[in-house]
Image (tube, rainbow, N blue to C red):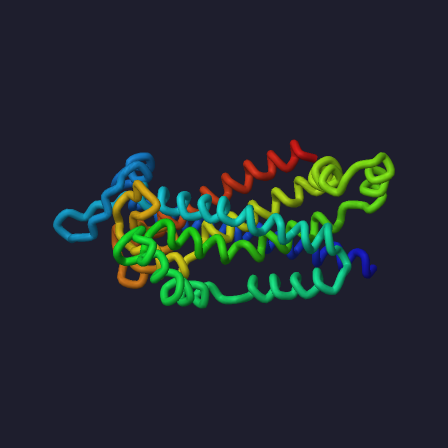
Length: 283
């Protein structure tokens, strides 16, 4: 009897998740129909114009799509050289030691810090460094927001990667050591192949975190509607434009913002789908 009740509870939870997902998709699609009907789907995602003036109301999402992808993938590139050594430190070299436990606790603490705190730190501490380096006069832009995003996602990537690395069976490593393999060779030929799919998945989750980040990016990217062509340029992401303008939007502008939200949902879903296919091949 208890097994039946437990099974039904699990089934109800799964159905609720599906209903919530379907409701989200329905609300996004229905809310964005006006924008897609006015401009067309491909014209909307291919246009860089964003002019809310009542006499020449025109909206396009390309600038924000480019800004989102630039900041997120740059953040991931900046993240890997720092998060991977931390994962190896906690999950391989000092697995089970006090220092690894201490570092893991610090990483978990950093992962729990609200994004607004990272944004404030970036605004008052890191942005002046960008100005002193001469990247641009205001310190805002793609580079600034990407670096802060990288700092934000390092705890996620390093924590999850460290867990997967620590789960590699010791028997496999000991077998490699018995054959005369060095620590480097064991990591290269045993640890990474065994934990590779999990490590890759951790970076995809970190990328998803970067794609949807709002407050920190809004404070540092510059909030201009132009198409960024260099790291020094200011711009906007899909999340930041929604955060900045959703409260005062109505009519066609509101529908365009909802359409941007739908596009962000689709981009995230496509990236996750591609990642799952890659993970399936790695396994």
